[in-house]
Image (cartoon, rainbow, N blue to C red; front, top):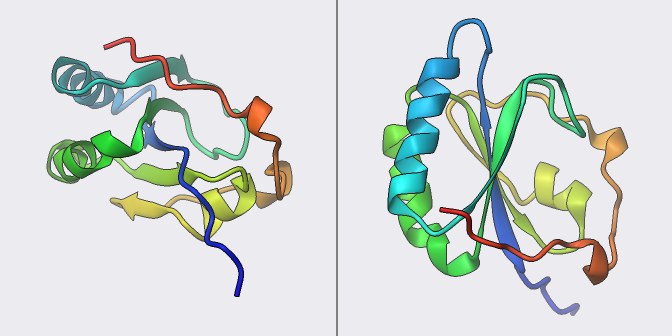
Length: 128
């Protein structure tokens, strides 16, 4: 029996449409910043990585999960949010170990590596 992977951190990707739901995404982001010790990523209005819609990332430590994810579930303003662990297995983290709040969106698996080295996993530096 293999050892289960360790969750090093978590990401939440908050998806939005720049033309119709950016204002809601801004309110969600402001709510996160006011309440949680997280690292808020840049706004991506063009597609990046495996994501098939504009989004911003929220990176957080495992200890923040129990408060942030329930808050997102109730306050995501009808936006889709992908929440996934970071275990050094990006493909499985995004596709198998993830959970969705709202409507799931496609994720491009072919751009996600099976494994990464720990050195490539950025530390969480809270900016909120």
